[in-house]
Image (tube, rainbow, N blue to C red; front, side, top):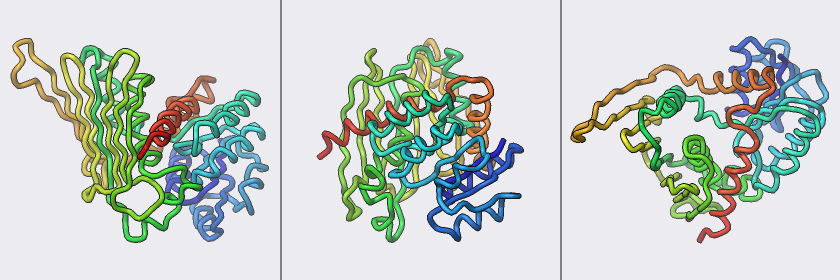
Length: 325
């Protein structure tokens, strides 16, 4: 299949590499910074540089990857759907839940598939966690505890993520979206949302920390914290069942080796049976997610991590921002 890449920054580059590794073609690329588009085109055999994202949609690519700042995600998604293109749009897919509504309508009207870039679902530790949970080894799930953070970099407060009109928010809509999505993937929808999104360190108009307590209709909880003031990069995600627990640490790179540990409770309790898996190799989540996108199109089914997941995610984000102090 032929891909168009709109947004040629780090994520757009990862998507282009993943598509090509799977045997697909990147036929056109576009970016507001022409040098960035030209650099990516040079890495993609036969790719041309479009003058604008609108002209990129006029080509023969069947699939469009949208990896722009948040203020353009929904607008480009609607335009791509109206052109009959299948879409992989990066999370959060929009700035607000209301911006998702016309995207869903356009996709339904034109019969196209929309996958949202929740690549954390496709890390090997999370694919293994899904397998373990589905096996019933943990028993009924009770709650989740998750932490995710980095410390930014000099000048971070001047980047587009810190401009609310562009980003739609700060750390909550950024890394917090991944924690919400992963929690929904295991526990389902949350009916009660409690949270705060303060700014402690960075001189910005957006939040640099978010604290969440999310509860399902059945009483299961997700206790989550995402931070731009985590001075040593951190990822930790724990899933607690009645007879066992999964702990996932690290995402590779500066977050440390990705590791899953399964703790199985004994009838007499005490120290649990402990089994660990490590994933020290390169991050293949981008490739796995593109493969899922293509499979969903071929099988005419909703993809794992779709536009409705993004809408539910942004509903939660909006409720917290609405009550944030």
